[in-house]
Image 1 (cartoon, rainbow, N blue to C red):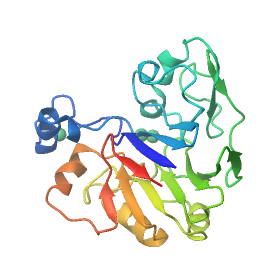
Image 2 (image 1 turned 180 degrees about the vertical axis):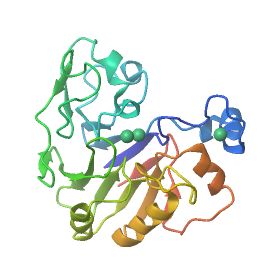
Image 3 (image 1 turned 90 degrees about the vertical axis):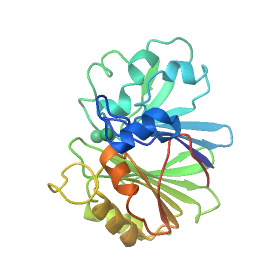
Image 4 (image 1 turned 45 degrees about the horizontal axis):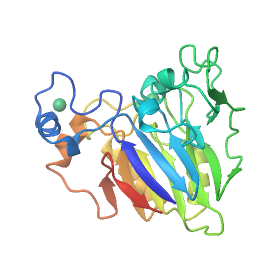
Length: 252
Ligand SMILES: [Zn+2]
Ligand SMILES: [Zn+2]
Ligand SMILES: [Zn+2]
C-alpha cells in the first residue's frame, strides 16, 4: 500500500490569509511548506481510495474512473468541499463511504450527482475492500466523526490508522487500537501546547499522549495549524513522531 498526503492543514490552511507570522511567510515563499485541507490518497494495487475530499479541484486532479472510492471521516466543509463541483461530473458513479451523519453537509445527500453515497459504516465493524480490511473507529469531534484502520490482507503488521479530526480518543477506540500492533498512525494535531484547553482538535500534548498510548512504529501529525508550524520550528519531537507535509508519500 502507498499513502500520499494531499493536504496536511486544517480549515484555515497555511499560509493563513492576511497572516504575517514566520510559518505563513515561509509557506508563502516556498510552496513546500504550504498546507491544504487534510486529505490523502491510499493506493493498493489497482485500488485508489481518496481519504476525505476537502481538496478543491478534485475534478481536475483525478481522471474519470480513477478513484475506486471516497471515504469520509466527517462532513465538515474542510473535509468535503471538493465534492461540490465533483458531483456534477458525468460518467461512472463514485462510491462514497462515511459515518452515520444524517445531515451530511449542505445539500450533498439531496443532490448527490455522480456521488454514490453508501450505507453508513457501523463502528468497529470491519469491511473488506480489494486487498485490505477497513475498520471504522469513532473519534471525538464537534460532528460525528470516524477514524479508519486500514489493514493490508495477509500482512497483519502492515496497518495504517487515520485519526482526524479528533480531540483525544473515546475509551473504546483507544482500547480497540491498543489491541493490535500499529504501523503508521496519522493523527490530528492542530495546535501548539498551552492556551485554552482544545475542544475539537488535539494539541501537541494530547497528540503525544495518544502516540505513547498506542505505540505505533511512526506517528505522522496532520491537520496542522500555522501556530503549530511556528512551535515546531523551535521545539523537537520524539524520533518516532514527525509532521506530515503535503505531497509526502509513505510506503506501507
Ligand atoms: Zn478538519
Ligand atoms: Zn500565520
Ligand atoms: Zn472537523
